[in-house]
Image (tube, rainbow, N blue to C red; front, side, top):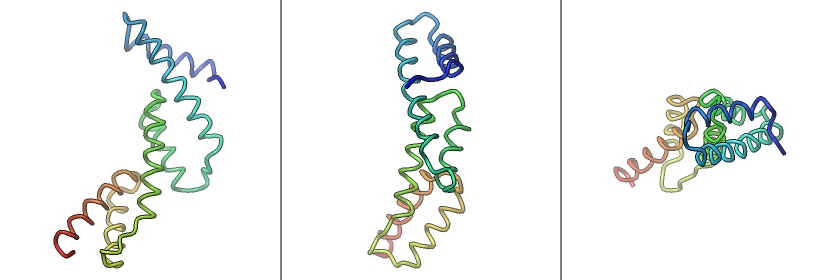
Length: 133
């Protein structure tokens, strides 16, 4: 698979701007960004964007890094992984009502950032275990 001419021009222009006198780095950036753009294209074709979680993760990655395909890919994969871990998180040591309260608070404080939700969840559970576990 190859990226569109428009995407290729964006990648090449950015590489030349960021590394004007370093052709090795330009080549590296072009290869890395092209590979990431191809993966992002495949994700956009194959992910179920009717799923609110997937849609949120995809929108976040595209809006935060409109011209950096490596970062788009990093954010998208990190957010999906974090969402999976956040919603699937269980801990038999923590009272279920307490755990649900922690999840609800994390979700409301970070509505579009599953990595932060997971971070808050893990930190709050660790603190709860130290206090009450």
